[in-house]
Amino acid sequence: MKTTFASLMIASTLAIAPTSFADDAPNPDLEFETARDIIWEKELSIYSGRGDGDLGPYISNLAEGYSAWPPHMSTPNSAEDMYAAAERMTEQTEEELEMEFVSFTLNGTTAIIYYQTHMTRNGAGEVVDNRYEVTHTWAYEDGAWMVLGGMARSRPDRD
Image (tube, rainbow, N blue to C red; front, side, top):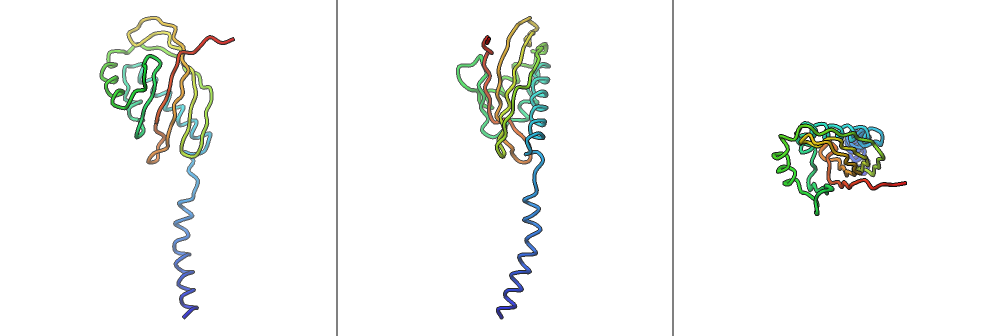
């Protein structure tokens, strides 16, 4: 009886083992270089869309619980604020800006990307010289990197 029970235990363990090993397979989206490249590409897409008056690429990447603090606001924005901004921005199609990657950090399913932007024309087409430092925090949700939050500030003059 003990031998039969032990045999059944071993057989059931072996039947389950391949499934658990498959679940432990590394996810390339969570590896540093791959995550950095995916997220930077999403950031470039967000700003490209924004330059065309389209916040759709940003909105399609919002994580559950999203909140971000733009430099011109006194408090952070929610996802609902982003939806309202998208409706107002459709005519703002002339923004020109350059983006410069600065740094990236990753811890499990959370990542933070740091970059600088230099806006030379705003969405209305006015010539400007606005420089910002930006961070976005990304969370890996349901198989995709999604922006959870962020903060931008005017870039101070530095020596």
